[in-house]
Amino acid sequence: METVPEQTRLHIPIPSSRPGEQPDFSDIEVPNAGSAERPDEGVDPREIPELASTLIRVLNKKHEAVGPWAMDIPVDTLRRGLRYMLTVRVYDDRMFQLQRQGKLSFYMKSTGEEAVSVAAALALRSGDMFFPSYRQQGLLIARDRSLVDMMSHCLSNSRDSAKGRQMPVMYTWKEGNFFSISGNLGTQLPQAVGWAMGAAYKNQDHVAAGWVGDGTTAEGDFHYALTFASVYQAPVIMNVVNNQWAISSYQGVAGGEHATFAERGLGYGLPALRVDGNDFLAVYAATQWAAKRARQLDGPTLIEHFTYRVEAHSSSDDPSQYRPLSEASEWPLGDPIERLKNHLINLGEWSEEQHQELYQETVEKIRAAYAEAESYGTLTDGPRLSRSTMFEDVYKEPLPHLQRQRAQMLED
Image (cartoon, rainbow, N blue to C red; front, side, top):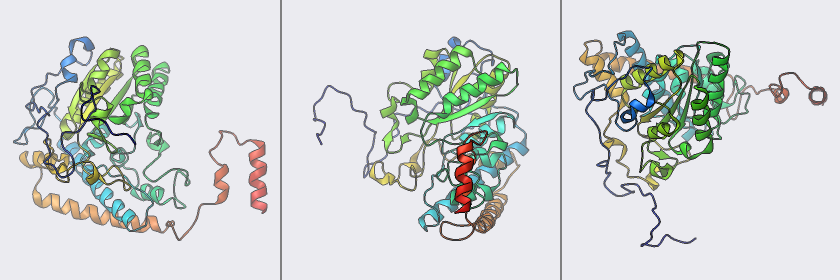
């Protein structure tokens, strides 16, 4: 394998720090909370290019909600958001531990990114359709998906709604308007645009929302989606979760060095928002802004959520091979759960004691859910799905030759 020469005219994107070095986030400009302007939802995208390059932030260092993006969010919604985010984190920790014990084959955590999915889910309506990537389990939890069903899917047991046809964490939930996660990255965004176009064509008041990572923006599917969304002014929110790392490639490899990912929307005539992804209130406000714009037929929005992937890409990854071990703890935008917790405490609507009680309750809830999930089968024991399910959900109407094959298998 040839190495890159020390002196070359070709630019090779290299992260600011590597394993064994001191983390360096000095190139990240963090504007003051409340400094970004909030335009009317019907604004011409050409009038707000600065929102694609700044950072929409609501929570300041004193844990106060400030600026034009600070909404009058009910305290009950904030508490629900905190509970859901904490549930996601405890769930992730438990499932990852089980994978390490050999009880799951694979897992992917969303530590540090909980606000991206939970805040968006709470800002949207139940009739809105989600087209997620594989780190948005918070969407399911915020829509009160059964934890037992989520765990059963990861175990591929007899209760698995995907009937053993998907990898763990590639969830699906038709009843909850949660489209099946695809391991082929990027496919969900054109599908989200298509669903939104269909909803508009049928005069429905629904919005589609899709999520991709920063690395996926280098895929053709991302640009196809932006083209169709722009041309047909589809009621869709296209979310780019810039967590700084696409597996082991840092975001500069996908083009993040020379422009923000939000700025890619400007070339398509789309309004683009760059949001502090670790600020629950900012994500909630930006999502509601984009949803209102879509519902009043003013078109789609591209949102970049600027956040950080605290843990490994997956249970098969070792981030110590490509970034400093202390990098996550020095991320300048903090922890989304801690920030929302401190905001509620500042409002006088929460306390450290209540938080510890909620944490312990959540741990017990997750433990009980897994015990129930195991009763439907594990990787090695318990009830199994019938082999006949391989013929189900293949075509809308069963084809004669598949019916014959199924009958033959049952006879054998």
